Image (cartoon, rainbow, N blue to C red; front, side, top):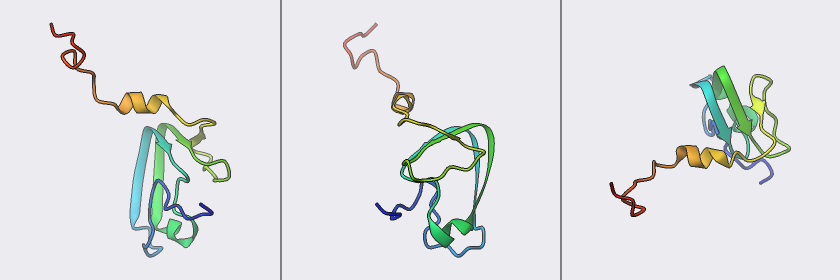
Length: 93
């Protein structure tokens, strides 16, 4: 992608006036990069609280206040999936 990603926290096209603030608390982020590369990232400010983790491509940086994950967080998909319905699986009560 050679830096063509907009970032998980995207500020592409914004003026560098800190227009976007994000509070990250006990979360996992996953994508090519955390922030929009270049001057566009200057439009973002953020805070972290609790356990904040991120999986990003190997050459992308991660700030010290965010824990870098070494592998894609596959278990994250099962946490986001809707609950299984007992009827959907033929297990009606």
